[in-house]
Length: 350
Image 1 (tube, rainbow, N blue to C red):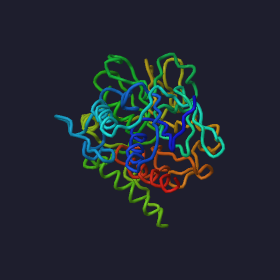
Image 2 (cartoon, rainbow, N blue to C red; image 1 turned 180 degrees about the horizontal axis):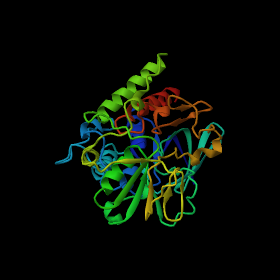
Image 3 (cartoon, rainbow, N blue to C red; image 1 turned 120 degrees about the vertical axis):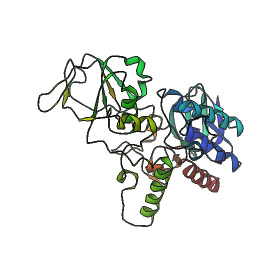
Image 4 (cartoon, rainbow, N blue to C red; image 1 turned 60 degrees about the horizontal axis):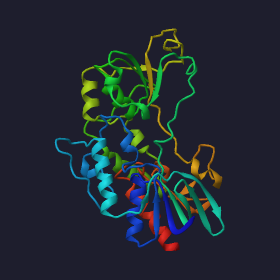
C-alpha cells in the first residue's frame, strides 16, 4: 500500500521532531518515519553517565523549554529521553515507529520513500537520521590481530563492565574524555589521543559553543574570514566529571600508537602495553544509506547543500548532520533554526 503526503521526515530523533514542530505550525501534511520502537532517538542508546554540555534551558527544541533535572545542572541522557517523549506527545507529531527507511527514490514529480512500515510518495523529504547509527573506526593496523575486546562509543555503557581490566580509550574529543573519566578508578586506564587534548576553559559550555558556531556561520555567509569557530577554542568541554578526573590527575593522555598487536597497542619507539579492551571514541559519519538511490554523495560522503536543501535534488532537505546542514545543527538547541528554514522553504514551494 502506498500513501501520499506533502513531506516525509526520515528520523524521529531531535532533528526530526524539530522539523515536525515547524511543519505542524505551517499546516503541512507530513509523516515522521522512525526506525526506533520508542521515543528518544540516539539518546536512548548512550552510556549511562553521559551529561549534556549545557543546562536544560539551553538544550531545548523549538517551542518547549526543557525542564531542569532535579539536582543536576547538566541533564543526563535519561532526562533528554523523557523530554523528547513529552515533546512529540505535546505537539501530536505523526510518528510511525519501527519504520526503517530502506530507500528514497525519484518517482516522477514525487519522491518515493520505501520503509518497513509501508511506502510513501512525498513532494519533499527531510532526512534527519543523524550520525549515531554509523560509527567510524579508523584503519589502524592490527585491528584484526588484537586478541582483546574492541568497542566503539556506541557500545560502551558503564565502567563496572570493565572493573579491574586494562582498558585503552582512543579519542581526544568529548566522548573520549567523558568515557576515560568514567573509567578512571575502575579500570587500569590508558587514554590515547592523536594530539594533546585541548580542554575548553571551565566556564565554557554548550551555550557559548552555540553562539560561537552561529557567529562563524554568519561571518562566512557575509564573506568574512574564517576565524575557526568552535574548533579554535578547544576540543573537550570540561563537564564536571571530566573536570574532576582531570584535576585529580587521572586524565593523562598518551600519543597515538602505530598499531595493535595480539596483546595490545604498540608505539613507534617499540613501547607496548597489554590490554583487555580498546574503546574507539573516534566519531561518526552521516547515516545516509537510505539516500544512496538518489546518487548525491560526494567523495567525503556528504551531500552538497545550500543551507539544508540538496543542490542536486531540491526536493530533499538534510537536517542535523553537523555544520554543513546548519550551524550546530547536530545539537538540541542548534537544530531549531535550520529546521524552521527547511520547513519555510518547503511551505513556500507548496
